[in-house]
Length: 591
Image (cartoon, rainbow, N blue to C red):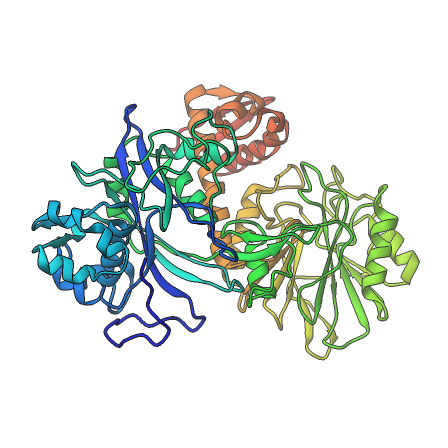
């Protein structure tokens, strides 16, 4: 593998980004296996002290070289303009394609060439691998690189905070006909053709024994068509790519889908730690990802990707979170209590003090500890479900702070002892001090008394159960109402200055408008399934419709799902598409 020195020649038109990541390219080489399922070529990198990629199984690839940009003129089947559009770059994208082709030749001996003396070039692969000029080899043998054989697949950037970072474009390609991948015993110690499922199983140590990884084949040996012995070590990008490839039944399907992709998003993991302090990359899509990016953009690995109970987490100069130890199927990792104050202020407002159960005393002591040396001057609730508000009574006893919140219209599943000193109205503001203002945002639906609270200075909305992470909330009639809930979601789309969600369960959530749109789409999609199931049945009870409508939900949760399904039926009835007769619901065609 050749690398471009930091003082790179201007011949390379792609600048390094401000963080110093090296531009790199990789090709995912595929073939149809004996069963028809795609097999992918993986190589095991050499063992090198201090190298995070030491001994890992990867796809062929490496950093862009100085000559790659110039070789664009030798590419067949692609153009600079088309490549720039595909990769979303202003210029220089074809250099990534060339780098992927060159690295594949150097590391595993596969040469993608549209014409020229390919056979002679393959015999000179050892010279290029040990430092000879790849461009000169192409010129000597009249090669035109087959850039059209590659389809752009994905874009990954190494997490901030690591000493070596790579900004890598991944391509997929069918293995060139009549060529055989061979190990070079330099960069690649071992090669294997595996289905994505075999590789993932081998990482978990579940594959059948193959040859020992220590038994590296001699230089020039062909790739094995079996899982290597032992456990394969994979980087997160390789693991996630294999999971993606496992969806396809053939190489043709992989290539067709890759060709149809338009500007796949860049995937940049972030370093996070678990409760024991162990650091690992956290992937986009994991619950803690956005919060880690907000609190640790430099990648120090100091932010926890778990929610350990009773541990205070400082989210900003105004906000601290403490998670109660009441984790369950209904509460996820536990109920979040938030402490909010003006910057540098001593007066603390507590949002959702949590349940009144075996966890209460320990939780409230943690809240008091996080407030110190300040004092709690008010207790605010989002709603009165039993995992959010009952702790307010005990906290008020301990602090003398007044309780602010609304009383539910219906008592079922509610904290019926809740007795606030003040019931806020929509739009009401509470000034916590200089630079800290809470605004009430009435959001009934999950509960009739639900109120979110917007910290105006940060655009941070404390959502209670109106929006929670990783799950949709239960809408439980009669206090819960699906039509009202959807209207309250719509309301958030028009909320000025909204930048973050602080949910009652889970981590901080970025891009709140996108989250709301997903929730609305999900709810309307579920409503369509309810309507279709009732139309097909003609008449049925809510419980009878659950297996059809919620077939994607574990059966153990079907009892809970029946509550939200009933809320959907009530909405359909209000829309004139269903009617109720005792326990039975009847489909009603609209005129």
